[in-house]
Amino acid sequence: MQNGLFRNAFLTAAVVGITWPIAACGATGIQGTYSNQFVVLELKAGGKCSLSAAGEPEPDVCTWKVEGNKITVNANRGLPVEVFTIHDDGSLTAGDFGTLQKTK
Picture 1 (cartoon, helix red, strand yellow):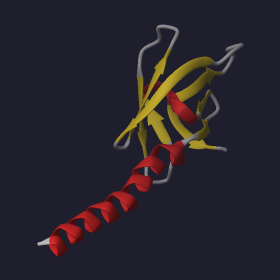
Picture 2 (tube, rainbow, N blue to C red):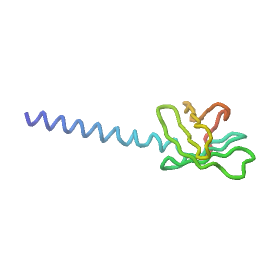
Picture 3 (cartoon, helix red, strand yellow):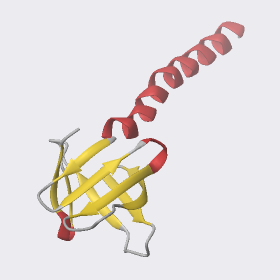
Picture 4 (cartoon, rainbow, N blue to C red):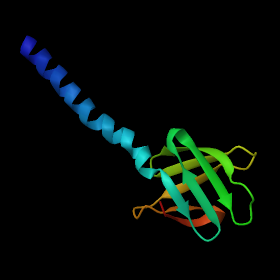
């Protein structure tokens, strides 16, 4: 009986040890700067981001989170929440923003 308990505890620890870093890296792998000719979105550590559009003197400070293949960006100036789709090639798209490519 103790062998079964030990085996189950070991397997649980192994699964958690393998999957936790993968889950934790999901968001960090998406961090970086994305842009097109009109918009620059910088996803930073800790869920912080900045979003600037052509002609704006300063970027909006915002927050972001990943859920599946979606990134939700919440600007703090009362602007609507934007939901970006993460594509297989690493690009992001959202409504009026068009396609943003990772540049850094």
